[in-house]
Length: 227
Image (cartoon, rainbow, N blue to C red):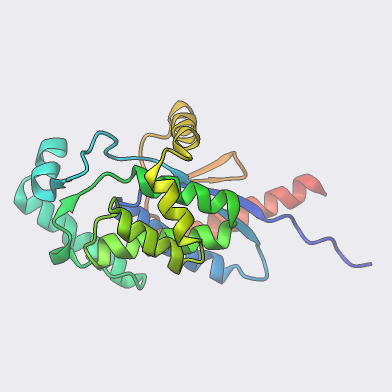
């Protein structure tokens, strides 16, 4: 008698496209799921979180922003940038710190990500998320720029003309706001926050080994509970 395949683990990856530790966390999670291929299946969904919801369209100088928000000195900021770049490089993700000089508003990017998840599915949503991370952290582009967002949507497999229409109006604004409130009301105040099956929380840009161990344990426990 053939065993019934275990249901995939549902992973909600709560993050912002301007969060470097979110890019690190996603790269690490991807490595973990690759190691678990054939053993643990996952279904990955991206959920919105804005680190700077009040940020204006022109953005803000990153050094000025970090000093205002965290009190970081230039020396501290430089050390943090070096640590982030090293972690990214170890995971195959490039942080081009010399190209990233400003912090931008990311709400419209989250609207497109929500649209992608609703209409095109997890694979296309992930492709768009990864493209947004690369555009900002590797290429130094503005993730709030509508022309860029339209192009990235098209390259991810979405309809670029529809993306343009969404960006020109307020489509998915209410849905994204509702999702943001939901996670904040459930105690999510820092990202990345990785929520597995709506119950298990893994926070921060953890190494692949941490994600691998946690996902394997959750899958094992889920199978035992359903046995």
